[in-house]
Structure formats: structure tokens, C-alpha cells
Image 1 (tube, rainbow, N blue to C red):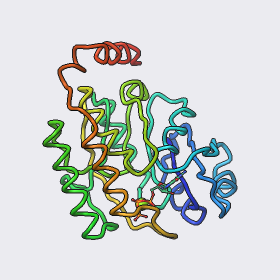
Image 2: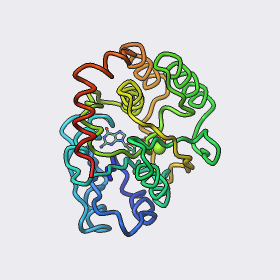
Image 3: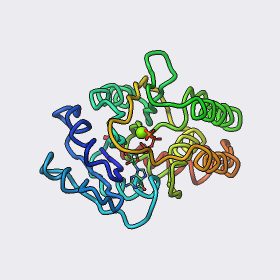
Length: 238
Ligand SMILES: Nc1nc2c(ncn2[C@@H]2O[C@H](COP(=O)(O)OP(=O)(O)OP(=O)(O)O)[C@@H](O)[C@H]2O)c(=O)[nH]1
Ligand SMILES: [Mg+2]
């Protein structure tokens, strides 16, 4: 699993405490934290792989983390204590049941959030509706950091972004690539300690920019070289 973390030392004990025993690798991408995040991570979990982040932003952190992962399944988990690691089982079950991408949703039956202002909720809903309309998706949530996928998906997602728009971009690319996406109900808890790094308007506009820029292009991707890459990637499935 990949954990992007910027000054989350106080939250890491809570995050790591909920992780199932069978997780084989935790990659923590440290965004030049000044609160001892990396040291706390190593003390809590001696086997943790700490990747120092060179660039800036959550998207940049995830890209570095994905490169460092060695497992077939990758799960992204925020380090603010909002994600319950026990849910990883249902994400993995969705992947083993045939999904390429298990997408967390707070707004599908069984999901919930304790950590969303009205502005963010409305913004997320509007952006989600825009993605559904433009790309033919049927998502109930968009800007949520708890997701899981087979690593081979990275070949077709081909991430190129730096900030909080990263989940929007992933969710668009998986649907335009024709991957099998399944939503998994998830409960987002309150951030336990520290301040949010997200700024609703700035980051909402960045997500909107991605939605406007990306092309639906479904047929071309399904029949062109993109589809060939997808088939090749699927062929590498265990
Ligand atoms: N490595 C790294 N991690 C980051 C960066 N920006 C945010 N993160 C992490 O990404 C995760 C999500 O960030 P949050 O600030 O919790 O964003 P959010 O969940 O939308 O907002 P709140 O939960 O309300 O704080 C957290 O684990 C952050 O520490 C960054 O630039 N580098
Ligand atoms: Mg959070």
C-alpha cells in the first residue's frame, strides 16, 4: 500500500493500528515533513519503505510511491487517520472478484463521511456529475483518496499530475481505458490531528481543469495502441 504523508506523525499510530496483518508492504512517501513523520513511521513499523519525496503535492507523492511498490495490488491510504485499514479487505475482494480498479466511495450505500464541509460536498458532487456526463462513468464519488487496483493498471493510467487532482485523473483514465471499475463503500472518518492540506477552491479548480482537458476518446482507446497496451497488461495478470 502507498501512504502519502505530509506532517502526519501524530496520526500514523492510528493509521497503522488499523492495518490488517496480511499487508505485505507499506510504502510511505514523505513530503519533506518537519514533524518526524518518517522516524515515527519507522519506529511503528520497522519494515516500512520510506520514500523521500523530491517534488511537491499529493499527486507527485503517489507517483513516487507507485514506483516503489512491489506488490500486484496497490492500495492508496491517506495518513490523516480518516481511512480505516480494515476496509482494505473489501477493496481486495473487489479486485479478486474481477475488478481492475476498486474505487472507494463515501456516497454509495454503506459509505459515509464525517469529514466534509458543505462546500466540499457540493464541489465533489458537481465534479463527479461532470465526469459521469463527459466520460460515461457512473461514479457516486470522485475526489476520494482510498482506492485499490492491480498494479498493471498503472501502465494505462500513466499519471502525470502533481496535486489533489490526482484521484480525479485516475478515475477518468480508468474509465476511458475501459477498465473494470467497481465502487467499494467506504467510511471517511475525521482527520485526527493536524490541518488539512487541501484548499477547496484551488484544488476544485485543478480537478475541473483535468476534467476539461482529458478526452473521452473511448473508442480510440479501446481499439488503438492504448487497448493493445491494456490487453498486454491484462495478460500479465497472475
Ligand atoms: N507526501 C505528501 N503527502 C501529501 C501532500 N499533500 C497532502 N498529502 C497527504 O495526502 C493525504 C490527504 O491530504 P489531506 O490534507 O488529508 O486532504 P483531505 O483528506 O482532502 O482533507 P482533510 O482530511 O480535511 O484534511 C494526507 O495523508 C496528507 O498528508 C504532499 O505534498 N506530499
Ligand atoms: Mg483527509
